Length: 336
Image (cartoon, rainbow, N blue to C red; front, side, top):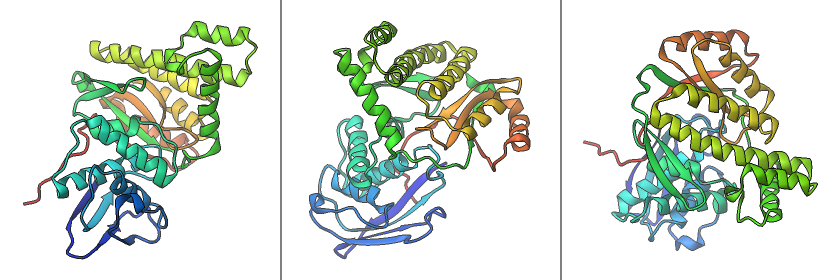
């Protein structure tokens, strides 16, 4: 899957942007005046707000340009289509201005700000970080406490691949359900006198129980604390080439997302269960914010067709599939 922006500077005083995405059903073209970046306003079509936000948060004023956007990343599937568009846009702006930020994390943060303030989506930072810092054959370990990162080689997975399965039930990250869970975790950290649940341990969950905290708060907090530990353990497993352990952690992660964080769906649970029924599947979980979207499954290469056929036969919806491996993040492609 990819998102590509091709374009060049314009002699006019207007930005002109065209989307070739088949999932954008109307208003595929947008034009707006070149104004001071802090005067850009979000509006219709909504997809253009991601582009406007990147222009607004770019490190310097940008010239007028004409551009075409093409993407094969499905929209609303939890596969970071918005981050892909933001980071591709920012990279395009770097190319036409010749100006780059010194720190990659600042680029990711600028794209996150674009999504918060122009698209109105209170997203986290993971999607932008991997879109900026992705490295072929590596996993990226991100600590959201201090935004430190570590590239983890996983080139040993010659016999394994990730299968992404789209339930084709779109998720909505900006929904009140997401905000409610986030706020619950903030309140839990406050009760524990912590800056965030990144500082908490499983013993702190017991403290919340002794404080007679609401059951919902306990469950949300338990998911976050145990998921942090699973992430650390998963990084160690990948470094050791222990894919069985990594798959086990994927399974535990989904079960926690389903039971404690409660962001799964009937469709996602069916897809996960069907995948796990096949021998050679090491782990399967939802990916993205949940409430629909996709699952990601770690499996042996030689059973890809078997798993796909099994899901097609038993899943009540119309699932679509993508075979994936860790790839490089956004880059400039030279056209000869």
